[in-house]
Image (tube, rainbow, N blue to C red; front, side, top):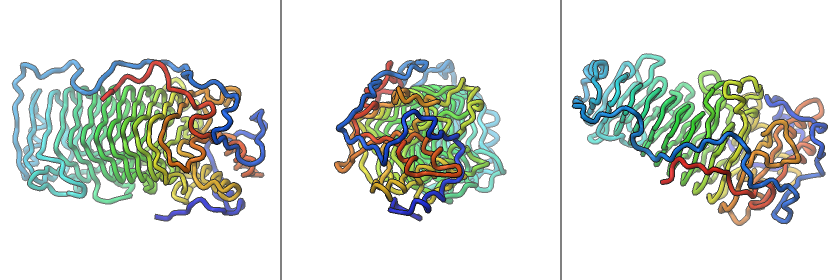
Length: 515
């Protein structure tokens, strides 16, 4: 992997990386506080007069009801005599015929071995269980004596692997290999349990791989437990437009995004490993989607070494994910009421946590009209986590791309200047883009109620968080007279527990998930 650490490069050389940024930038005249010389670093001795900490951002609050898994929907198999159909390798056509004629509450039981399909397995019935003998291990393309592998390498183009619509659906103990589109797609379903499932594509870093490994969407009451996802060209595990989701004890490696929670309400993401992806954890709303995501809890996850080069297709994949710089441990974008506790971040080259406005990715407010203008991020609480270090020293792996990943290009240029001029060699653990609520109001420096505190950090840590002021910084890096010194002057740096971000969450608290 190419790696260019932050070093003392010339300003002229740094400016060449910034030529295009979608976000409209501010000029100096847009901010009544012109920057002072050099970097403002608050190392804990001056909390300033910015005293709006501790209040929530005043967004619409619906804390939902507590849910930690189980059956909550209206369909039940109680009193119904569901049949069990057993299959062995070589009976692929019989499996296809059976799933096309299932009655409610049936079980498809597959023996260990390899099953090769030329089309998707499509289930459209309620109360179905689809089970194998085991998910096997990473790289296992053929089933063993205790694993069931569904192979779609030669399936028809543009087809999923397992494709489901139904209530009370369970899938467990199978691997889905080389699906053409999504490996496991479950849509418009209720009471879904996905347990011990592995999704994988054989080749790494291929934008022609399927987009999503495990993909429940437009569903309700979904549990994803003890699963694994590798080499997806968008996200290994993607919960989209769903209410009430538990994502626990899974592994997501070598994907563009490890685990994504999109336009979803009331999700609990617990005990997962997100490692060696382009970005580890993602929570965001997409423009054009009427569902407003809120109330997401991330607890006891490990987000490590997410430095894989971004291989998402700009056209075939989500344009949002394709813009993420390599080395982003977690990004929060257009999200509300999100809490992080007990998690561990380490060795993510760009930044451990980025808190962004949706306008950083899609600057046209009209594109957010379907969600009532849901680009704003607010009420983010990051506390009692562990930041082990080794992060933030090589933004986008030292290979920024101003056209594909403009946010990363701006951060790269700014911190290259900081390294050259001030000896600052790492991006802080938490970066806030400083956009919301737009336009920026300097009299309310933490109007979004971003709270950070009580996190364990390396002893050498001087500043924990940066208010990056993306609009002002980018405005001074573009145009006919880019000025890195002025741009950097708009950034503000804070030690943990200082400044306006030393607040304690939001009310009411997130209630979904309490394992």
